[in-house]
Image (cartoon, rainbow, N blue to C red):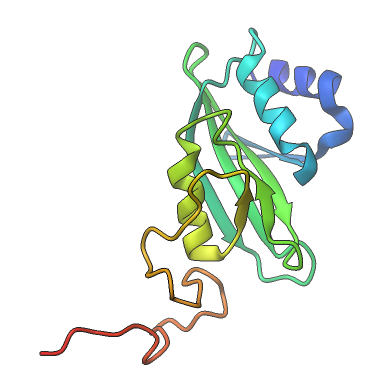
Length: 160
């Protein structure tokens, strides 16, 4: 299945593929951020691939100067029993990505979680708001610069 996936992606959108990596049997394909919606629709709709299930959307803070953040999509094909990871890089200066919730409705909650914990926005999302932290909270807890013990006084705590 890996060969078929790479062959179809290269024939359809070869200019979009930045890297292809394999680690412990998992394939990770990094694509250009602007091409993400088209690639996701292709992966879902192609009859030979049929990646019909989005299992997770993961935010990553690499804490490097360029393309500091990454968004990783865990995609699964039920008919082929095959999983791979689709990854995009996000520059800190432009912390927005196109939503894929119109391709896989399950992305709505996953994208909200990435927004809440990393501050990465998803353009076109129907209800992008925080789900764990209060709306007025100004920080993003899974960023590398966030202190391990939190920021004293940043959240009102209940009185004893």
